Image 1 (tube, chains in turn brown, yellow):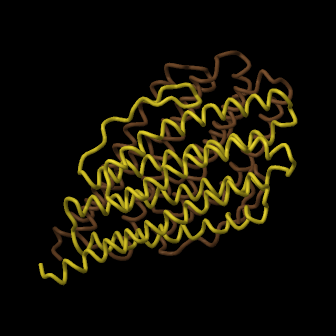
Image 2 (tube, rainbow over the protein chains, first blue to last red):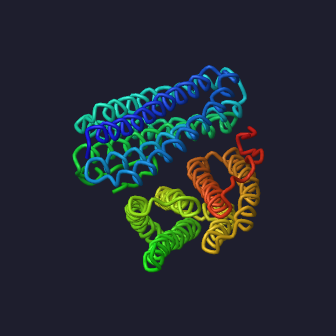
Image 3 (cartoon, rainbow over the protein chains, first blue to last red):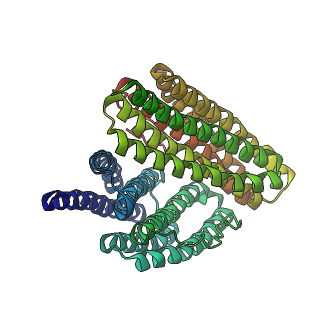
Length: 233
Length: 233
């Protein structure tokens, strides 16, 4: 294989990693804007966030085309193949993160704007900080090909789950206290769940980064308890 | 290309379609069992359903490996490439259907068993029948490569959405009537949403079948209103 061919292969892989980085940045912005719109009851920002999500779908499509081309042209093996498979899975996770954020933005419009909601939404803001931190850390781990950092992201997901479980219970309490809170809190329950699932996608990405870098799977998922109280072995 | 090569290529494509059919059947069973466990408060069935989901993850992994092999070996173009891309996307959707059903099964265990819940869960049973019908129809459309049937599945998704919106409101009413219903109904809200999203996955599959068969995208999504009351353009 000529030097030129090798270099161009690297360029192709770098271009794919660049698309993933673009998707990652966009996914983070979408989540930030959706939850900011929720907490400040900013309907304009919510509408803009809903529109923004389309770009993630486009990028996913572009990455798929690039991946098929590179597989067909290069017949990658070993670490290169793992890198390509990881890119496919990670881009899927990032597109799903965008969908979840879009759903939060849609609920901003559904929740009638009143002062009470701002107080009730604060818990969602808190879990979002954690989930966004997870997303940022795992995207850094991907860029730096850092398996240990990826492992730590998966480890830290239990914190997001714990916050979610307590938020779930808190929102139910608000519902029980005053039936007028019920509709709003129902939407906030879904918002909180969406953010918790963004944490799960960060975990998926972490597992794929770890496998991409090391060629080995992380040991079985730790036992995980969610708000359903069921251990998810 | 020799006759033999062509035949073997077809065999590879048929094997992939066979895996998709297996995933489809398993996804349908998982949904049926999860909701049956919910309505009859059958904890044993719920636990068995949670375990069953692992097989869908395995099949997804097997399909991915097959797809990469076939792309690397055959450099598919045109309709063959569309078939392969569709298989990748459809298998992802089916794996997600299994995850959603698993989440319903976990909530069966979380909901304290009492007679009231059976009544409240009936609405979930109804939307499930519709969503399962959608899933069955779109898998038939895939097997028969029937673009028109796929188009009809996408069209019919608005019915699932309408039932979901009315179920969402009904469950909120039960919560407002009696605070003792709140925890159970919160879980049922998530169950209903999961089933509605299974309908969305059937729609995704329909769009992929249509594109696979015709090489053309279905026209822009119809405007869609969900329980958030926001038109999803």
